[in-house]
Every structure is written in C-alpha cells, then in structure tokens.
Length: 124
Image (cartoon, rainbow, N blue to C red; front, side, top):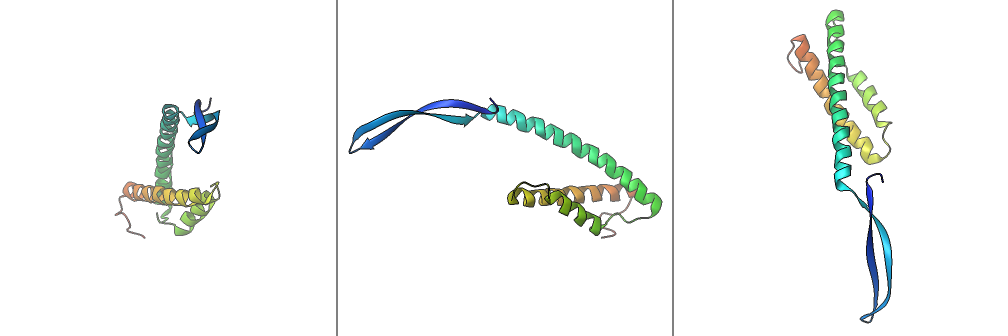
C-alpha cells in the first residue's frame, strides 16, 4: 500500500479519572524501509542523470572550444534557473531547486573549464 501501513491505537477520553469512552482509530504509519527503498531508487536515477548531464557538458565544452565561445554565460545560467524554478510545486522546493541547480551549473562550468584546459573561473 504505497509506503503506508495501518496501525490500530486505542484512544481513551478521561473524565475526572474515569474512562468516559474508548474507541479504536486506524492511523496510517509510513513504512520507513519502503520509503528508504524508494529514495535509494530515486538517488540512483539522479546519479545516472547527473552523469549523462556531464557527458552533454563535455559536448558543450567541445562546441565552445570550436567556436571560441566563453564557458561562463551568465544570461543562459539565469534563464536556466528561472525555468527550473517554474517546475517547483511550492516555495520551499523553488528555493531548493534554485540552490541545487546553481550548484550543478557551477560543477558543469568547472568541468567545461577543465575540458578546455583553462583555470576555473578564468573568464568569470
């Protein structure tokens, strides 16, 4: 059942030290092992996609090498961040995605500098 299991809990209402009524409630409890398994699967997908992204960053570095284009393109980076933030479903995720992608873009930029044999930050 989608990461949840059911547990039963007895709820007692106390009235002047006497039990007024008893009832059973069904509560949903997250299955921690199942949730961790899902996170592990997602993390593997993220790692594979990151590595694929870095391969494409190598293609971008080769293009920039052949055209003389600079690695650092602040306008493109801001366009990318703006587009990514629009994918968020709440304010927390919007900020988190911005932070995450700024870091990913920074890593990608460093990799491109490395591929081009330039010092990191040489053109920034």
